[in-house]
Amino acid sequence: MTSTPATTPDLLEKVTNLAKRRGFIFPSAEIYGGFRSTYDYGPLGVNMLGNVKRAWWRSMVQMRSDIVGLDAAILGPPAIWAASGHLETFTDPLVDCKKCKERWREDKIDGVCPNCGSTKFTEPRAFNLMFKTQAGPVEGEGATAYLRPETAQGIFTNFANVLATVRKKPPFGIAQIGKSFRNEITPQNFVFRTREFEQMEMEYFVAPADADQWYRYWIATRLAWYLDLGIPEEQLRLHEHAQEDLSHYSRGTTDVEFAFPWGWDELEGVANRGDYDLTQHANASGVALDYFDQTTKERYTPFVIEPAAGATRAMMAFLLAAYHEDVVEGESRTVLRLDWRLAPYQVAVLPLSKKSELEDVSREVLELLQPHFMCDYDVTQSIGRRYRRQDEVGTPYCVTVDFATLEDRAVTVRDRDTTAQVRVPIGELLASLRERTGQS
Ligand code: ATP
Image (cartoon, rainbow, N blue to C red; front, side, top):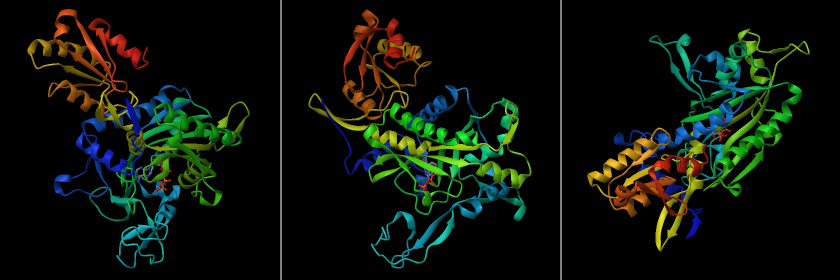
């Protein structure tokens, strides 16, 4: 078996096509001609995106005693965004091409219009990325609301609520997964940059003197998360921002970058936000957002270390890294080498034929596995075609029920990556699959 990681120039196109053809990601509102830069997650995509979020939640909340979860509102009053600095400074530099009139984000185009090649632009204007809307039936100032451009602020505004209810003390964190909205000037590269997207953010509150140590800790921990879920080391790197490029709130930012088909680009940012956010919200709201240390009798505003990742962007990176084209026994195939924790289906149950005796046993096998694994069930086409179809969507194991199963109560388990097949008694199937996926 030969295998090439498909770092070809058309990788993006191949993955985008596969995502649509196999029900991962559809362009939104397609029957109406599409709505630029919005995407819908199909039957397989919703499984995979859910798995990405579950893997994050597991490592950030479930496996730790120092981090708790939160699910805050998406709509918020202007007061939050005035205090956080977003109304003032959450802008990108917008330029118009003087020749073709297309609009671009100046810092992303290197002085050349990607549409017509012209180098003549208008002076850059600060374009605010916030989505503004109206809450309630009466228009006017008091009704203005904003869709959140990041999940983080809901964490800061709930700092005192969480502290009072869960009795944590620094160092401790609050984690949140949810949708965010930014009126991006040039959404592009499939789901890499969209106007509606999903984030996975955690704010880790620490004593100011410990901030630098925790900043380093979270950079290393977040890099390790992507490696653990199967992105090869050579496709990941860290990029520390220069002091002059830092956002208004940041004392230090390091991005985890992935080798996207167009070059290195951000997957996640880890920032030392200092005491900026809690101080801003305390001043604006008049509510104290600090911590009193009973042992040292000191009151202080914690510093915040923030690992901020994109769920939808991470899913795209996992798909790109998993995409391979193989030749198995002289036949070429496309295979997604997804970690079993991320694959849309972990197991596919495949009756060799549509004969009812086989379907009966196959249903029995399916019901045995469904409480433990996300399973697909497929009876159409030849078994070879069905294996290829499962390889293409990354299903790690196929379980085939054939006529011998009726005699020996055993099934064939086929491994996606090696294509090796082993015979396993139905009575041992669950334990065998659990062992293969490293579950106890
Ligand atoms: P950029 O400078 O590329 O616009 P950013 O540095 O402002 O992005 P952050 O505010 O740090 O991005 O957002 C944290 C994470 O949220 C990003 O690393 C990314 O994974 C995700 N994210 C941000 N904007 C988008 C978007 N428009 N579409 C998809 N994911 C996004």
